[in-house]
Image (cartoon, rainbow, N blue to C red; front, side):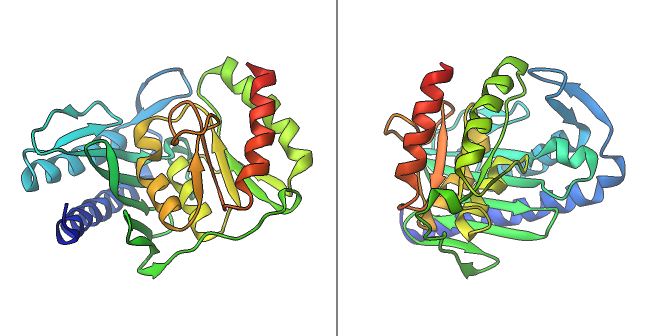
Length: 266
């Protein structure tokens, strides 16, 4: 797709992410109105999750009716254009419910299965992360470069945990083994924000098992375009099986450590 067309996709994603972010902020007073659960009693859905997805989906259908859409809250529209939108209308729902300042809107555009545009609007901070494949990553218009650290012992590492209790227990064991080897661990509770924080150097690295496409599509592109190396434990691209994002020099030692630990936990 020509660069001009990618910029049009970016502009649409930015507009809808900002509209949805305003909705999230306006709904904070009613944030604890849980309307449903999904995979477990801790995997919650609010009315605001669904309202935010409706705002984004309606905007996409108006602007680009032939595109496919995949949304966390159930939207699964087929398309004929070759473009698919992958959206998380509220990344960090638990944070949102508790009023913790780490929740965002994530919108990515894929062409033939490859993410080409990513937008993460951190609604809690009013920050906008954007990326276009091959054109770099930006925070509020300022170009991003991830940190250049190579020392695992000095790395601040982010991670996340599953909603499934058994998997969460295994993840806790891995984190317990990682903690003495690194500077410290952070658990932000919003994967898209974690990946963007690797891009801007607020985290040195991030890893997690069990993400969904909408969790990582936009944030992964932002991290990669900021210079981070991002992949799974088997040498492939980031996926639901595993995602690791880190500067080029830090990726190999952290990858080796996590591969060993996850083999032990298998």
